[in-house]
Image (tube, rainbow, N blue to C red; front, side):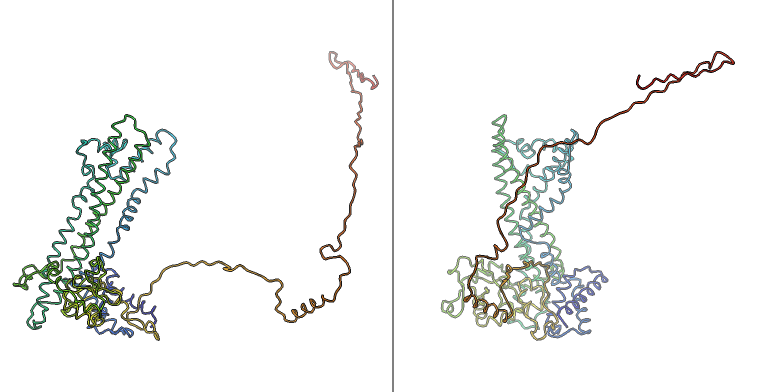
Length: 589
C-alpha cells in the first residue's frame, strides 16, 4: 500500500467514525477524531503494528475503540484533548490577535466607508448627507457613542473625546470616565478573572499531585490501593493543562493591562496639554493643534485595541471552564480529602524551595554537561523538555507530573535541556538519558493528552519512520504536507551566442585551412575590393522649369429673337373675324 492509499484509507476511517458519532448524538470535528485514531494506534496495549497494513478486522476494531473513547460520558482525558484542540484553534500570537481585531472592525465599517468614498456629492443636501456619514464612521470607529444618539452626534461635530475631557475639572481629569462600556469592563476586569481561575486550578493541581504522590509511592503495593489511579492521573493532566493555558493567557493579559495603564496616563497628559493650548488661545493655529489631535486619536485607538484583546483573552478563559467538568464530577473535594487523609498538600513553590539546597557536585560536571545557577543568568528562560516536568518521575512513578527545579542543575543532552525534581532524580536520569527519553515517549502513548502537555509532537512523529525499501507500508504513515507554490524561470537563463564561423564538418575545416595556406602564395593585382566592387563616381544635370502659359478655351454666346403674336377680334362681337398679327422684332434691331 502506497502512502497516498494509506492516507485515503485513514480519511475514510475518520469520516465513518464521525458519521457514527453523529448518529449517537455526538458532534465531533474531524481533527479530534483524527487525533484519537492516531492515539489508539499508538497505544501499546491495543496491539496495532505500525509496520503492516490494516486488515478488515483491524479497521473494525480501530473504529470501535475510537468510538468507545469519543463517546464516553465523563472522561477527563477526552476533555483535556478537547481543551487542547479548542485552545489551538482560538489562541494565537498578540500581533495576529490585533490584526484580526483590525480586520473585523474594517469589515464592520466597510459599508459606511464605501458609501463615503463612493459619494459624488453635488448639491447642498448631498454634502449634508456625506457629512452625517462621516460623523457616523467616526462614532463607530472610536466606540465613543451611538450614531442614533443626538448628543453624541452634536459632540462629534466638534471633537467628542476632547469635548468630554473639557467637561471635567482640570485637576480631576479621568480617562476612565471617558471610556465606553466595553473599555470600562475590560479595564475593571483586566487580568483579575484569569488570576482567580488560576488560583482555583492550582489548588486542584496541588491536591491531585499530593494524592498521586502518595498512591504511587514505591512502598505501597498495588493491592493496597482502591482508588482509580488511571482516572486520577487523567484528572491531574486535565488541571495541569488548564493551568498551562492560563499561564499563557495571564501573561498576555498582564501585558495588556500594563499597556492600558501606560496609554491612559499618556492620553490624560496629552488631553490636559491640548485643553491648555485651546483654552489659552481664542483661535489656535492648526500647525499646533492638529498634531495634538492626531496623537490623541492614535492613543485612543491603541487603547481600544488593548481593551478588545483583553476581552478576547477573558472570553477564552471562560470557554476553557467547561473542559474541567468531568474531573469535577468524578472527584469531589470530599473524596480527595478522603484519599489525602493526613498527607500534606505542597505547592509547586514549596517543592522547589525544599529541593533548592540540593545541587549537582562539581565533580559530575566533567562527565555531563550541566547548567548551574551560578553559570548563567537566564536559567528560567531555558526551553526545558517535558514542559519543565521531571522526566525521571514520569517514568519511575508511572506518569506522575512533578515540576522540575532548574536550580538543582539543568542537564544538557543532545542540545535539549532537562530539569528534575530532586538531585537523586537528576543523577539517575543523567546515567542513561536516552533510555529515560524512550520510556517517557512510551508512557505518553498510554495518555494521548500528554503529547501536547509535555511537548512531544516531534519526538512521536519521528519515532516510526517509513522503511527505505518499502515506503508507505506503515500503519500510520507520515502526513504529506501539500502546498501550492509557483516557480518562474527565464526562457534563456544564459544569453544565446551563435558562432557563425563554427563548422561541424571536419572536411570543411580542412578546406578553409588549405585556402588560408594558399594565401601565402597569392599576389594582389589591383585595389579592387568587395566593398568598392562596381562602384564609381558620376553626376547628372537637370533644368529648372520655365514660366509659360497656354489657352485652350474661348467664351462665346448667341441670341435669338423673342417671338411675340397679337390676336384681335376675340371678344366684343358675336361673329367677328379674328386677326393675328406677328410682332416679333428682327435680331439686328
